[in-house]
Length: 235
Image 1 (cartoon, rainbow, N blue to C red):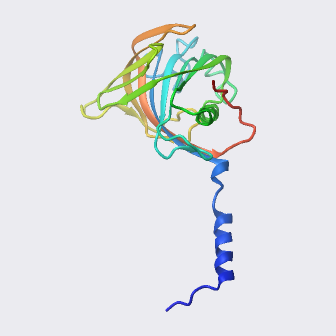
Image 2 (cartoon, rainbow, N blue to C red):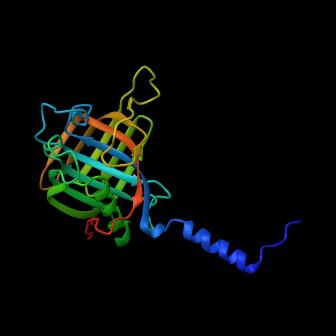
Image 3 (cartoon, rainbow, N blue to C red):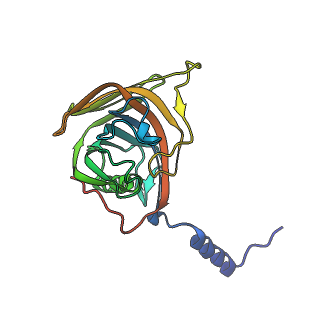
């Protein structure tokens, strides 16, 4: 039989284990399922090089964080956020952090707490580190549904909606996907699953599109929380 460790040795072992463990308050780890559609033809040419229509990229991006997602000690399981935007046409001139963009309206779900909204804002700024010419936030109730053939998201107010009709290739049971393509500044993703998107936004800058570019994607982002990271104010 093994002899029990002396109390001092056991205490030292516990201290060493705690010292080796990462401080969860200083790190984040999220995986987000995404329903996204924009004004481009299927698929986004801006991911591969200059396109013939770079003056705008009007889009609705809807994110739902998977169970276990967190920012520091803030639990983001099943939290949702909606971003309506126009990226403008600077993608290829300023592809890195600080890229100038036109405008964005971030809609937080009514079910999100102030701490969760602050955390979600910090994640958005980490994965999409662009510089908005005009930016605002609001709240609404968000619905999110991703099925085998159709993905849909809606704002209860009717301000915006997205419907994706997924495309298929020879295998009619599996959506067409693009693999090994970077999604903004996320760490990894499961591929762009292509779809024809019908979506609209009835805010100050209105737009509406039928059968345009759309996709679902699950992306992951993780790392250390940077104190200087800008935060999105919630209201």
